[in-house]
Figure 1 (tube, rainbow, N blue to C red):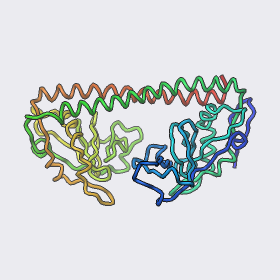
Figure 2 (figure 1 turned 180 degrees about the horizontal axis):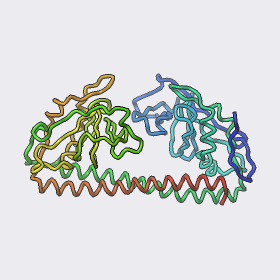
Figure 3 (figure 1 turned 180 degrees about the vertical axis):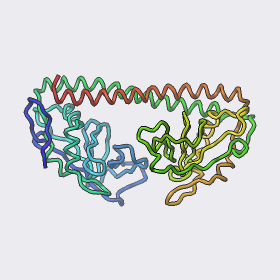
Figure 4 (figure 1 turned 90 degrees about the horizontal axis):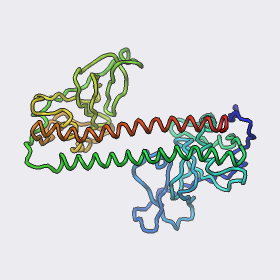
Length: 364
């Protein structure tokens, strides 16, 4: 198999000649404990990617553990290979390696960034095998690192650190925007009393989405087709002209989406049509439904689903239309602020990737 290397004038060395990659362990499910006294987190690949919500803990006294701290670089080779992270402490699973015993000729921060470059990621992908669970440890002997002088390594790190710090600050602002939104949602809607309460069946018609034929799915279509988990296709076909609230019916049952243009809700969804817009603001209804935790209403089967009759019985408190619009204005302002932050997040990620690739490929 072809060995991938960064095209530079710098000398290259194998990763294994520059450091030691110590593998995590599998202490076994019998080692997981609920009592947090004297325990540490057991870190799986899903914990590093954010795909696992249920954390696991193991006793510190367990001898079959590979314990890491927040300053160490971790890289995954199973499940989702090629994830490079710091900031985690605990015991790592066998799909994760920790970078240790660096040789004097390489800066640890430089290596942390270098492992994220396309050339390293392509090498890992080239040696990945497996269908259900991907394994890529075979790539380890083939990963090569281009080594500029330590002075240049530190300069590259300094440049990337500045962008990474901006990303961290932006992520913190996104989190604060989420917290502010939830606080306002509670204050303006959940905690209010004295408003008229109606069942959803009195406020909207709940319609079934419709399957979209493959021939109508267009990569550059004008509109979105929505599934229960959000937009799934582009299409030039329209099922509903006006803006609407889409509710997941199967799969992502109870998940909510607000359209911004004509759309096509597919057959795993419901879409709502307000009966009387003179007393119900669609956006207010959307925000109100977010307080109802609709996924909890789903029937739990192999494919979770929610019944239309169950949705029709959900109760909504409606203030006068003027107050609805005032509340919508406040909540929308926070959402628009978050939207700008998310756009900034994307731009910062693109900048990071550009500088990352350019710095290691061309130098400073």
